[in-house]
Amino acid sequence: EPEVTQTPSHQVTQMGQEVILRCVPISNHLYFYWYRQILGQKVEFLVSFYNNEISEKSEIFDDQFSVERPDGSNFTLKIRSTKLEDSAMYFCASRLQQLGNQPQHFGDGTRLSIL
Amino acid sequence: SQKIEQNSEALNIQEGKTATLTCNYTNYSPAYLQWYRQDPGRGPVFLLLIRENEKEKRKERLKVTFDTTLKQSLFHITASQPADSATYLCALGGMDSNYQLIWGAGTKLIIKP
Image (tube, rainbow over all chains, first blue to last red; front, side, top):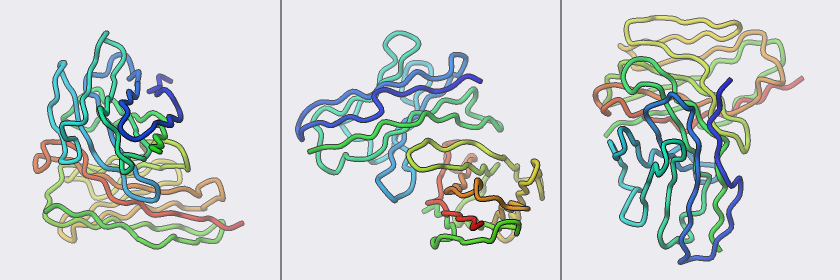
């Protein structure tokens, strides 16, 4: 069964450094998402992406965050200047359609640790 | 603002019994509700979806109900097994959120042998 893959599985970065988290969504999916989950807390929506542009973003997704689909297969999340509070699991998800009943398919996440 | 509540405490169930998890919501009229399972260190995995015009949905040992009057969904696992131990998340979708999923915090289910 097709899977969403994320790399790296664990990223350790100094505060203030830039970090790029990578995702390869399921190949025929059209909608892509990034979520964040701070340890022990709920899954939080960051951003959705469709047709090479952001379709929705949350208040968490400020100017420090950006997303890109550079080559038609990878979907990346960049944090420009990381803060301690950015430490969390970051999940990528993809979905065939936005409307209707299609579920989201998640990767296993990147654990981001900011020192 | 939209709010989803799931059992905040972990649910401990004896193996073989039925586990029932609750998802309540306010300030929202979902078109559908989804249930996901999340294991430690893993991403959520889709289990079941139920639409606003459906009362009940079943899949093997799983059953989901949806009461739009009570604004509540119940998720049942019958004949529970230790392997069912995980965190279960409910998520709502609909026009109110432009079809972005709104997530509950999850309920941790522990099935004791």
